[in-house]
Amino acid sequence: MLVASLGLAPIALAPSEVVIYSGVATGTPMLYTYTIAIAAAVVVIGIQTRRQLARAFFPWVPFLGWMLLFAVLAWDSSLRTVSGLVHFSLVAIVYAVGVTAERADRRNSVLLWAFAAVAWLQLFAIMMAVIGFPLRRIAGQQALDVLGRATGLTSHPGELAKLLFFCGMCALTLPQKTARQRWVAWTTLGVVFLGVSLTQSRSVLAAVVSMILILVVLEFVTGRWQKKYFVVIGITGLLGLVSVPWLIERFTADPEGGDRQHLLQVAFDVIREHPWAGVGPNSYVAIAGASDALTASGVPVHNVLLLSAAELGIIGALLLWLPFAMTATTAIHSVFRVRTAELAPRVLVSALPGLVLIGMTGWGLMQGPYFLMFALVAGYFYARSRYVRVESGYGRD
Image (cartoon, rainbow, N blue to C red):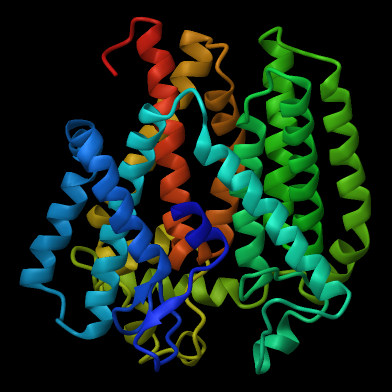
């Protein structure tokens, strides 16, 4: 239910009228389908494994404490800020849900299969749009901006590409004990490749290719090379060839990434003026836009580290990304120190350069349901990586 509401139907339920605001969250607090799914997940998991769910929150305690402190002392009490506070709090909750869900469902891997199903349903939506029956229509100026690029059930090609990247991570981690499971895993990966190519997202295309190539290298170095990886390399090469025409077209039209340098300077100026408290959660566009017309038009800095530092303060940003850094280091330790046979840590390590690239070239990774999906997947992979460390005698699960 949670994966479906995040990946297929992140629909606002109330209020019916909303002011458009280009922040990490909406301009006013809103109830979404995934908000209900998160609440249901917390209740169900809390009833079954309350202690584990509470323990999964520990990495987020410093960040949540930081937000509480500055919400009282520094940030304004506008609806925009409240919406940002709710957004970041949900990120912490979803991460804890991902950790606990993996521990409760290690054998069946339901979350991985759910993300695989999302990839197929998004491809179905893309194909329906190709034949003239779009399941979601995009109107206004944005329709011209995304013309010719796949959006699936999302509102922007970049959003769909990030969603498919998470689906690709899960597809690579699917159980492959039987011929049917292997067939599903590799065809789902093919669906991810096709979908990302059709979105024409340069950063995510590079992220997917790097994830596959690094995983193949890790498999070769650790002595787990199999003939099936020749197929993966072939599919990746085909993806690159198919994508060459639109890559040339996009780099020709926008060789320097638009106004990214200007946006970076704006963000540095904001951080310099507000190094401790930041401007407040979800307030970057509103505050920085007061002195910069491009930001005011709804274009924040395309870098999640700078955006988070500008909104939460430098220390607040470090605390926000601390659980994700912990997830990465746990996976790296499992791969290179423990040398585990478990696939999940190797997939996560392979995905790290791609995730960094996506985060350093855009801001959508912090926005709405996509930050929640990132937290859910990160929590799940952290628990899987942590488990293999424990099995090898490093700490407790």
